[in-house]
Image 1: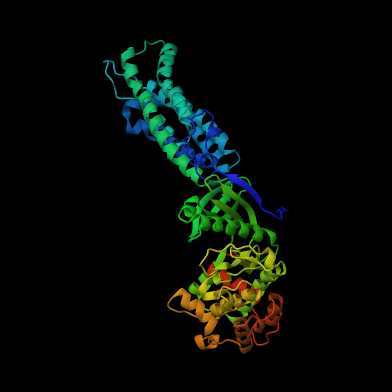
Image 2: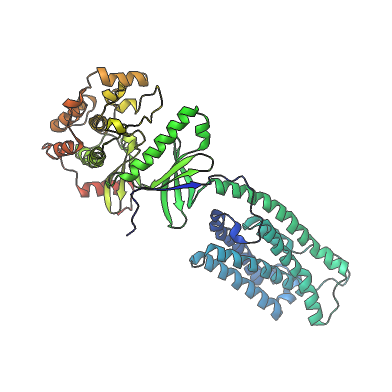
Length: 525
């Protein structure tokens, strides 16, 4: 079983590349992301070769009567079978996944030259007209151009291999003429026939270098050390969250990223606050061990001044999306969700940490292994230490910390001394949302919403929904929403005990959760 360190590893990594595409001859000079995608592109080129070879083998003599005699020659038949076998073998090797991508790309270079030789054997087995005329240009031109443009490789290596492939034409022509005891064509004719292949190598090499430069920049811009950014999951004012893939562990992760350009839009003081907040969030999350707190894998800073952390990728819904898509939740499920949230908060409060931004989007309901309806708490970005002498200001001056719709009165008033009961209030707001599909206060402005938590009494959840809410559960929610911290449940652990003792709430069982997830995502176990 892999173990993760109590503190995340800290790196300085390059996020974007200013340099161009690699120029060395070695394939290993390519970015890892391009190397990984290379075999798939090689497979497309190989498939085209296989289909063309099969068509020539089966239909060539029928479609082109002039080639029928050549098709019957043993050399041509062996040549076509060899091309089919080579193409099929390379495709099978790519699909099997048993060879490393770099090995497949190296085999592909040999394949490029061998296919060019096969094309030359076939075209030189067809009798040239007795009258010395040019019959077009060699199909090798198309082959080398397609290979260079589709399969990623360093430009110098691509041109060198392409020139070797193009040379197969005149080399095979002269060799067959010598073996068969016939004079070769006049040099000017076969040079004109094969010279376009050399020209195509140079043109395709130039275009391929430009395309590779673009791909290289994009690939480097989507790399964070061993992580490759795959898909943007969410974007907010503080940054972005990406689905990412660890190339060596072969594991998908979620990357929370603050790009340097986001910092440039801030004042120097604000940018410093953002950096401190983000680093504090990473270290805080890494210090927590509750299974209901999102697990942090890694933390890093880019050379451009941005920063990121990698965490476990969760399969499910945040609680805001859960209610928006599926409506208010059954009371038993709400108790099940809140109880798990209390476990995460209880550990944080026990370590002297207050989350300060408890809201539906910071709770994720997911499948974890075989367990459905597993709750994970995210985003400790606003967390503060309870001990005043250790407390550090990591908020932007003049800004309320937290989300107004789920803000405890003491946070709305900007009080310095807050404890875990501020999170209890936020959890009451989350419960209200889960039961009714509405926020406790929905005023016209964020400031008015924040002040409503200070001055207005919340209506009971049962007054805001047509769904039945057990009286015992409603009493607990209203206790969490008390204006004074002293009137709320004293701790997350005590709130969890209160929820467990709630007698009038129907149980939400493992089977209920399994049934719900199978309905939402058919085929899930």
